[in-house]
Image (cartoon, rainbow, N blue to C red; front, side):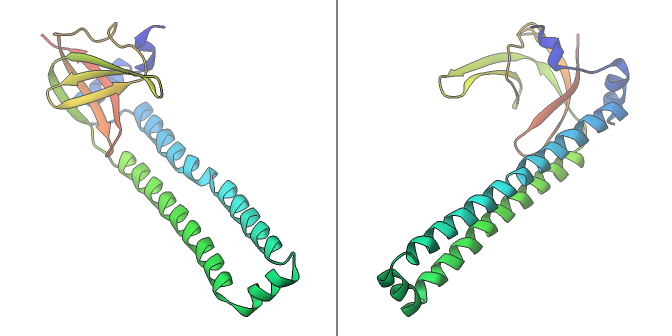
Length: 179
């Protein structure tokens, strides 16, 4: 596969990035990424609520299944309190994760065009659990790619890369080889 396929930018995109702006198509792409971050986290809400409800029903079903367990359940309210707190804690943790996903998406939407220039160093790692990762390194800035990029960036050559980032994610907007 041609490694340029992962870099879909035009001269208009590059020119906008040189001026420190996103092009209209890049704004749309970043908006789609941000929406995807939000949707992926919210999509799990139905699953969490389903399994939480299923678990509570199973526990209550077991507790109500025999006379001695029913007596234990109604004589000591601690069991119901712990069960209710468990529901609140699980929903609270999931709510925090949705909030974090929204914050990450907002940081991506509000990011600025950044630029790094210098000589490229290439690196790669391989793991049986994660697979391969390919790196383009300029100075202290490191870009991670899921596929081989040595056909796009040559080791030892100078490039100017325009990108935006959140705390964990650097998205390459455009790049150019410099003399």
